[in-house]
Amino acid sequence: MQSYLIIGGLIGSVSVLVWWYGVFEGDSRKLQIGILLASFLFAFSIVDRIITNTLISAFPIQLLAFNLFLFNVEMMSLVPAHHKLHREVTRSIDLAQRSWKIMQRKLSVLIILFSGCYVITIAAIYLGGFIYTLFPIFGDTSIYLTVVFVSLALFVTLREESTTDRYKKYR
Amino acid sequence: MSFTKKGLGYLSLAYCIIAIAVVFRQFYLAAYVIPISLLFLLSNSLASVEVSGLEIERKLTPMRSFGGEDIDIIIRCTNRTDRDFSDIQIRDHVPLPLIVEDGLNSIPLSLQSGGTMQWTYRITAPKRGHYTVGPVSIQYTDMLGFFRNQVKRMKEDTFTVLPAMEKIGTLDLRARRVGVWSGQVPSRRVGAGTDFYALRLYNASDELRRINWKASARIGHLVVNEFESEHVTDVLLIVDSTDEGGSSIYDFDLTEFQLTLAASLCSQLLMQGNRVGLAIYGAVRAWVDPAFGKRQLLKILDNLAMTKTGRATVPMSYGVESVVVSLMPSKSLIMFISPLLNDETASVISSLAEKGYLIMCLTPAPRLVKGADSKTLSVRILSAQRRANVIRFESIASLIEVAPDISLKTQLRGNTRIE
Image (cartoon, rainbow over all chains, first blue to last red; front, side, top):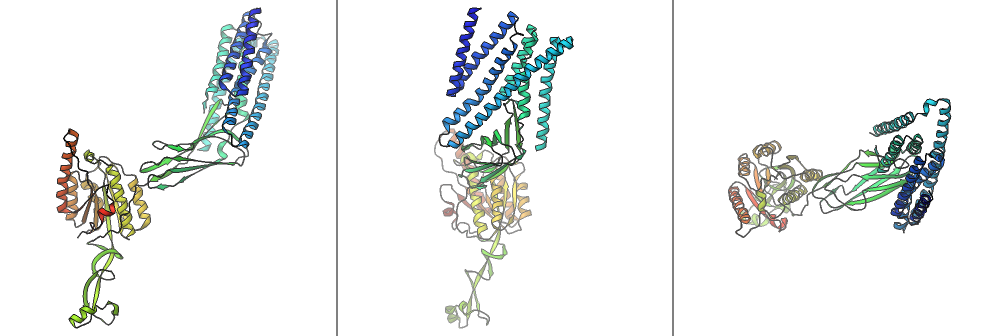
């Protein structure tokens, strides 16, 4: 157990270091390596929690880690573009400043978005637990999975329809 | 709408999590899908892009070119909405064979409300023809880039690359039939002109400066000079752009040379005030009714621009004769631009000559080739066949052989006068 923790800690530290180095450099490759290491660590911790059957107790922390992982993925697509602009646009300081402002705004939106996601997910899980105490039938995994599948499929279908309508309007 | 790679990645991740949850029967794992679903939902609904207020204008300069001239395309985008646009991709469709030489036809755009962005890109001088640029497509994604949408603005602009023209100087024409308007073609009638026509006895109404004093002294009566009136005439140019394999005897672009010749002749004939029409016979069959003026020149050049070399779909006797007879009155001047590679041309020209038309045939001359290899020999045989046709034509019509390496002005000077 001790060795697992040491390996996990090492991988985590390396991924954080590579990640921040990538952010400051604007190097998308370093960011990708950081993300890969973090995803490996996350998958490793999930498997460990499943094996030791401690997934439920560590859920809020794991979810936070998952959200941070997704946040980093989003940052990965944001930061290199800004750095590239800074490197290439040497003449127009105004453009670089605008890009910096846009990046700041996008980052703040991302922070709000992921915080919201985290809070809503935790709330949904606790609400689910509350409903389970009232109606134990909802504790069945298959119902949860069916709901998730159906909602994803519905979401994709509705998105498709709304876009088609919008396109018709232009024509 | 389509998923971006990122969107597909997120969706795959969600389904992977569900699959792992099913395999390990850990329902809490499925809860990791909730943040992904929320991201999809919020990304789409929080920042929906409405591009209908984005106004796009395109300007092409020049709209008409004579080849060898690059085309500048200016795109101007104005945000008429009260929202800012960020990260939308504007792409102006440039079809093949057009090549973007300078600038970009596709750019990412961030535009504030009321803001305007203008940029220019340049297309390499294309070959002769009609080209269409557009439509402009606007690509945009949702806030986190899960979905990609594309809206095409149905706006296309056309530009024309006209055949190249050469200055050929004043054409000295003779015609059996002239129009009523004054021009530069002698009419064989007495009237206002510059060429001496005859002498006649002086009338009281004649101007004194027209008296030919030398002749009067010789005859013993006052006589005056009479001049030949000059009028405009009707000319129809026929361009034979059929290609049945014989054009290999030319080591230059036969069609382009013929079109340059036709365009130059039309321009000069119209400039001299004549009524000019055009008939194109080839893979594309077209004709322009005879008319005067600059607008007619543009109409003719537009038709010449769309000429394509190839096998004709209808026989020449029908394709040319029917057009000539319907467009031109008898005794009009017909200028036939043809490589004279087949016998059918001869029969059509002789038939038109029989109908009373005055025929002038301008034919591109191939360069002489020497050698004994099979390819050279085949070229020489074809050239000999063409030469035989040329000899036959000389008895039917006035024939001018033109070469591309000598200026048209030099080659046509004094040769266009036919009786």
